[in-house]
Image (cartoon, rainbow, N blue to C red; front, side, top):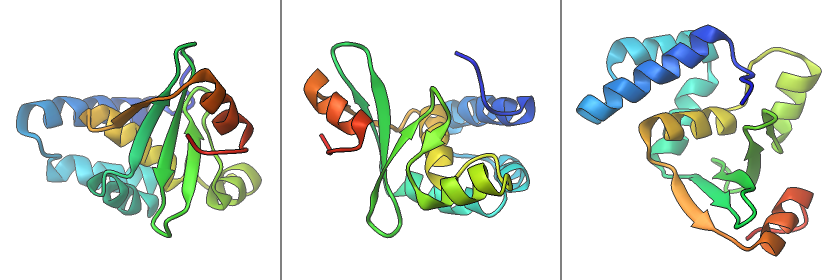
Length: 138
């Protein structure tokens, strides 16, 4: 799969994965690096991870999407395959203003994957079609 992130970010996630597997914690130096690379959304994304707000939805046909419950309680759908989130911050900050690599929801998905703490939910292909089209939740 083609990555949409700079090599430094990819390496940071690999370092977080390795450290978390060994100690079940993210060391301070990696937290500082996370803040340096991703800015203000890093802390908010870590909060979403702590709250177990990220769920990976997968269907029998092999489709995959992530849903993240934001701090306001809204449910956002993230697609890592095309590096997209349905939240307004992604549209405004990342797409329109080109002022960030990603939003806190996508960052939370990457962090959950690196830490292997993503919740998993199997849904039908029909439910996945509704999620992908934006017409419904699973």
